[in-house]
Image (tube, rainbow, N blue to C red):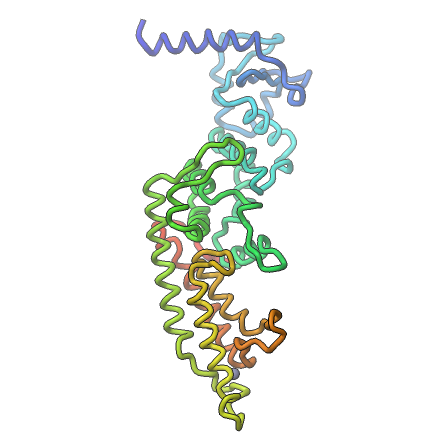
Amino acid sequence: MNGADFSTNRHSAHAHMAMYTASKHTDLYFNDGNIVLLAGMSYFLVHQGLLARHSEVLNELMRSMDNTPTLEDRPVLTLPDSSTDVAHFLKAMYDGISFITYDSEGYPTLSGLLRMLTKYKVHHLQNDILRGLSNYWPTTLTQWDAREASVTGQDGTYTPRDSLPHPIEIINLAREIDYLPLLPSAMYDLTRSTPSEAAIGFVSPSTGTTIRLEFDDLQAVLRGREQASRFFSTFIVNNLEGRQPSRGCHRRKDGNPINKRTCQIAFEAITFELLRDINGIISNRTSDPLYAMAEAEQMQIRDDLLNGEASPMKTCEPCRVEFGAIVDTAKEDFWQKLPTWFDIDVSPWGQR
Ligand SMILES: [Zn+2]
């Protein structure tokens, strides 16, 4: 007997044992079912026609069944997956995917299900979940801005890690299921952590294990982080440092020489503020150029609530509008560059 035969026999003996000790699943068990799926310590009585319709892989497996053992007079197909994953998988096929959520709490269910749908080639449900994930790990800047707004509190505090899965999980999942469009935004998200945090990884709240990136991905993240920060420095030098007021500046003709310089002084104050906050200590966002560039515009309309005085960073409307257009172009330009910076081949990218 060669090794392969031995392991097959041992496997089937194992499966045979499991068959008599497994317990029936309370929900996914239909009296008129015509096939038993056995996974871990649970078995499911379900319908061959439904499985075959949704999954070409299961269809093949069921077609090749002969001489299989039976349970409750139905043929048994043993799956190598965990009973929890199989339960979610079957639930998705019978009931749809409305039970999944895209937050960190729902992530273990979602990722397990997505792996199963990929493995068994249930394309339409897989696509539905990928579309949902793409709202949080998008390919367009518009979606990214919407996502950011949804995880920013009213007081401006930014706490995505409380509600969304960690970007390292998303990067690893995208690699596992070979779905690259999730990568650039997840990698950008991770660059907002310090390089050491990105390298050390994070402890999964559901399993307690430390999850890290593959070395190549870590390298891509760190390189992309350098490029992003270079882009931001250039943005400050080219568009903020020594910026002159707009031609249509409301204060241009002010007789008072100090008032006349108000907008210019505001741009100087904004430059100082951005350089001061370049490590994200104040706003709790470590090196996030997309945020910082938008902030440079927002500072121009915000009142100084702390001192109850007019903010020194307030500009007149023509100056702000002119600068706002520069911010929009720079952000879009930045977003377009993400896949190249992270060395990911995604097409189409950034199209609305
Ligand atoms: Zn002005």
